[in-house]
Amino acid sequence: MLVTRIISKPDDETICVDLGRLGITYENPLESRVHFLNAPELVAAGHSEEHLILKAKKNNSYKVGDVLYGVPFHICPTVALHETLAVVANHLVTKNWNVVARKRKIST
Image (cartoon, rainbow, N blue to C red; front, side):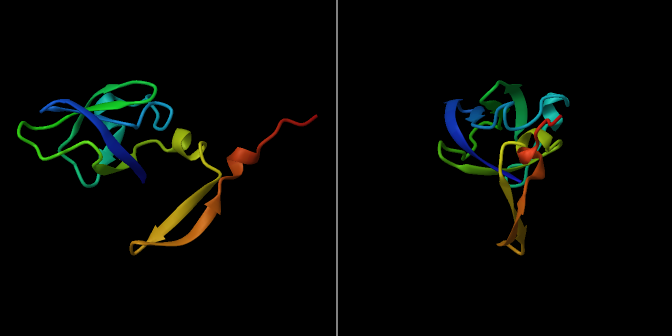
């Protein structure tokens, strides 16, 4: 799961979050790159290197600073960004896993 924040609301129906292509892959169709657990009605409308643009219904209650919890369809780019991952069970971090892919090297 990824945690992201609403960083701007250019208008009542448009939300910008800090979850760009550096954090989640863009090989899948735009609408299926990430699913937000606490905002399933949001629809992806644009994706840049650092931001994801979402469309919301008019008169929504979202505001700058709100946290969204996203589940990406493809996790490789996300996982490769971090040394460790937190394992959560029943709302508690139960352990941490090392990301072995971060410690790769080419040897002769």
